[in-house]
Length: 222
Image (cartoon, rainbow, N blue to C red):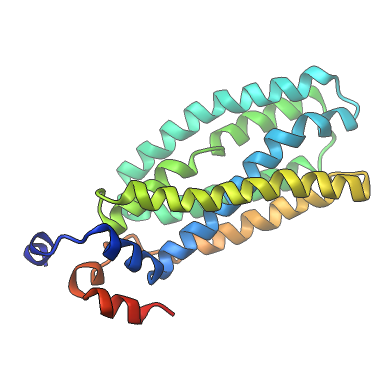
């Protein structure tokens, strides 16, 4: 198999066609939508939410800074775990999204104070962009590092689309209901769905990328 791969190195066209026909890649792209949905809602609306709950204006701004601190630690740790357990990147991603869902559910269920908001911010920071090294690592495992960045860029379009909906829907719900409560629970549901989507992803190289012709790959796309 290794000799076959070396003698039939796929080009970008073949790789893009293979990605379209590969269900785990589609699941990864859909899951990355949720990542953008989460992080941009929080970064856009958390300060307003804190003020609506009667907290001083400095709390929301400081919380965003604390998220940044946690993010440095969380992203580095995520990359290290992905390197240590290369066959379990999908499970690590699933755990990350489920942890976010649990954290959001807890946050909107407890009384808010300066301490609880900053504690929430730090833990969320640990989970903030921890998805990125695992997602990019999975793509490199599936399609080889040569075009991993290209496929990650395509997946990131889904992330940015989720970012739009996180910012827009949060404001829309607030304008309609006068509260962010519904949006927080949508965040919980989205986290659970993303966790489910990532669990069945197989961390394996796409074999038909090398063994099928372009025409055969085209025919396998639904």
